[in-house]
Length: 168
Image (cartoon, rainbow, N blue to C red; front, side, top):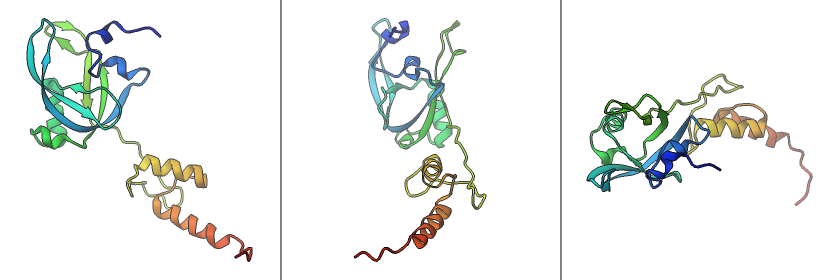
């Protein structure tokens, strides 16, 4: 496997190389800490760093991404950014000064929607599971995308139709 040249800049923090073949990463902010970092040229500066619940490197927050996090949460306080789900993607149009360098950007996740095959309603997150997890579990169990209510109805109906073997 070959190493992208930028990966050696600072492999301790999230970078475009972490995206691999993916267009974006769906990450959940665990917490945000202000940390003193050594920048190129040996300059030390305090920066906000995002730590994620998923197993990825932390991400240094630049001002553009900080403004986006404030917009997404409605709060300028880093303590209010925990548990926020974000999409991180590489934007090749990012400039540093006048130079086009590319960089990571943050946006609201694009949420997939699934429609229940039985009732026609949109499947919603429930019982600690995302809509996608519910849709995929019902598809593998019942062969169709089902909301939780319709999955329970099918489960109960299948239990009623199960023949009683008379075994104790």
